Image 1: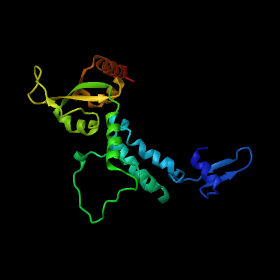
Image 2: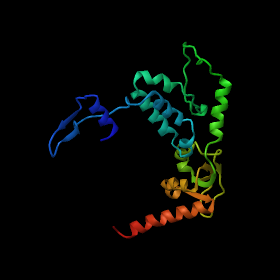
Image 3: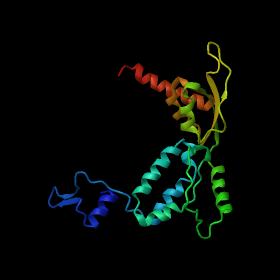
Image 4: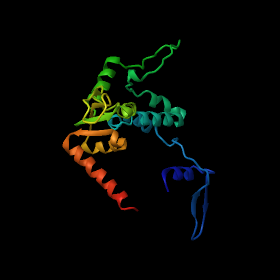
Amino acid sequence: MDWAASREVRGGSSEVRGGSGRYGGIAVLHGFRTDVTGLTTDEARALFVLATEGAHAALGLDAALSSALRKVMAALPAPHRPAAEQTSRLFRADRIRAADRTEEPARRRAGVELGEVWDVLRAQVERRPGGVRLRVRVHRSRLDLFRRLHAGVLTGEPQPDEPRAGERPARWLLAELAVPEVAWARSLLSFGPNLEVLAPPEARELLAEAAAQVVEVYAAGG
């Protein structure tokens, strides 16, 4: 029995039914949906502290995490929302598309010094895992998607690359990604022939092996 069903049983919920005998037990009624009301205040805060650690950005999951946290916040019981909202977070100003000025004044939490908060957030960004630098070559037709997916690990703006024999000019760009480990490069296979990892050599070997395995699967003809 999972924690949600167990909680419903202990609380005498009408969402579950029980039966005795050899084939008895407890069953969740059809259509039952759990929520996050079982979270404690500290558990709610922990979820939002996780968002400041940077690992999600290193994996290109900024947008996914933001969406997940919005859903969690919406589902949190009202008493737990203030604790979650008090977690300091860092946002990228270059991702803001529009802003409206309101008459509501900004209120600083008691005992919070902005300079100290900034030092903590900056340190978290600087500690972001990025022990491997991937040098890649990406086709211009996939550049927008590439930027959106990997903005968190791009070390700079992609730069034009010299065309190879038979290529049209201004079609390819060079970029560098700071990622936690070589195995992260597997996620780039989704770009197919529109992206090539140039370095390090072990990343190229890893992708060549993965691509060969895919070819072997399809060559077998099912």
